[in-house]
Image 1 (tube, rainbow, N blue to C red):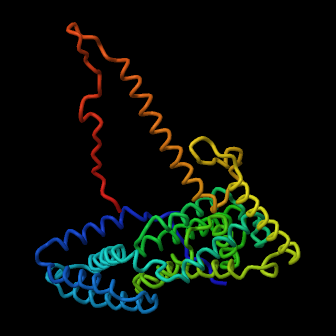
Image 2 (cartoon, helix red, strand yellow):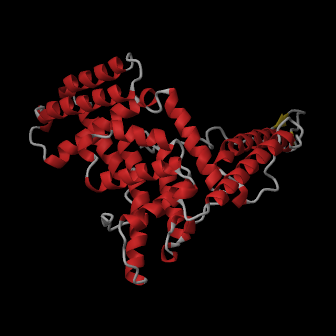
Amino acid sequence: MEAAPSSSSTSTSTSTGGSVTFYDFLDRMRNPASLDLVRSIKSFIVSFSFYTPNPDNDGKKVQDFYLSMEAAIREHPLWAAATFEELDSAMEGLEKYVMTKLFSRTFASVPEDAKIDREVSEKICLLQNFLKPEHLDIPAVLHNEASWLLAEKELQKINTFKAPREKLLCIMNCCRVINNLLLNASMSENHALAGLDDFLPVLIYVTIKANPPQLHSNLKFIQLYRRQAKLVSEAAYYFTNLVSAKTFIVDLNGKSLSMDEIKFEESMQAARLTQTNRATQIEASPTLQGGSSYPYMDAEAGELTVGDVERLLSLYKDVVTKYTSLYKVVRHLSMSKTEIPHSEGTSFLLTQPEGTNTKIDHQRGN
């Protein structure tokens, strides 16, 4: 089997280098000499929005636009003496700018994408209830919760970003953590590397543990809109492996695992029953004053699933809103007690000086 590409570090920043590249691109685009390029970019973005979503056709349109713009940038006076790296940086900036502008139009652009995302996530939620490393024949020497957790966190970041490059880097960072785990095991535990036979099962397990949001749509988005010249080598290897992991999970049954088929079906049915009971408990949970229910008060961390996140976020917002309202009332009452009687019968109110709580954020977003 082919071994995973080696990596000298466990993580590549999805923001630092990318931000420098992106802001350099924007700075050059502000130069009056780039007006023709700016017009081409804006024209493409506007015209693209008029087309009915068709992922395959949309991907071809974007890839063709990348190629035409690359040729235009190479011949442009602003890049007359540019190195290969500078031209590549310009194209990275272009990709991020265009796809961020078109994100809502291109990501999960057809109903089928949302349907598949939901099915994949729901199946992973069920598998999380019973699947163990040994069911995927992962050697004990590769059982490393710390490394697995780090890989999971990298993969879960994928929805934080809108640019294809940054989404792909989340996948690469996840896979590099796994690859380094394999390399460390081979050196410290005398474990003979089995290439893909070791790498893919760990990636499948990490993906199930992470249950990254909208996995299908994110993979499709990267495949369609990442510059094809960049989906090669290490990036292509790791990306293809995650696609394989997703396919394995979708098709997974008792025959796919080191697990009795009857036991697998019983475990899946038990997981469905657990999910149904949890949903029933949420609906039937007692309601506190104000109309909001808090069904997770007695829950343990290990009992929660990714499917609970949306409900927890709603409850969190409700609690914060009520706390803020209560704080304002208490503060008003305490301030009313700080009034100092004036000799002429009026009063002075001690208040915070105007402007002392002003916050100025100078950070630029990614």
